[in-house]
Length: 220
Image (cartoon, rainbow, N blue to C red; front, side, top):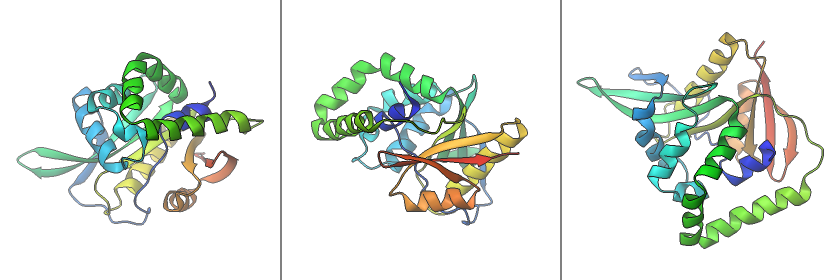
């Protein structure tokens, strides 16, 4: 299955803020661990509306999904805020790295029953997702080959404060440090705020298919 088709079937990139937002002094970034999976599921549901099929999945299924990206070539970068007495409040995260389409395909195979049950409970959303997938197959043709290193998603539950922008900048800085030459991403064509943010961060359009832009940024 192509990366483009995997993308349409599961998740689209979302950046609620522009890059120029101010970073809260108490906000810091760290890599997520298995203990953070409940927070990742919560943020996912807060960041994506109920019109997005993945927001309808059970929290346990979303925790399982994000577990596929904890290490072995991919990372989940978590934005947390200190709330006193050493406690943290998770506000957003970014998922990126290598092997992204393979991880999505593996999750879909291993969580097929959960996805099916969600489709039965929410037939309208499932129908829209299926229609989009079919349109993708029918319109598929020659396309720009995506890079191996992809930014899968940025999700932020707390709008404002530049959290999404800080996650994006940190991801690009980490890719540069790891000698990654090119970072790619997919974004819905109607998500103008995200597209403008990616342009500002140095991304350029490389392809357009079925309502999505593929963009790349050089890290060299």
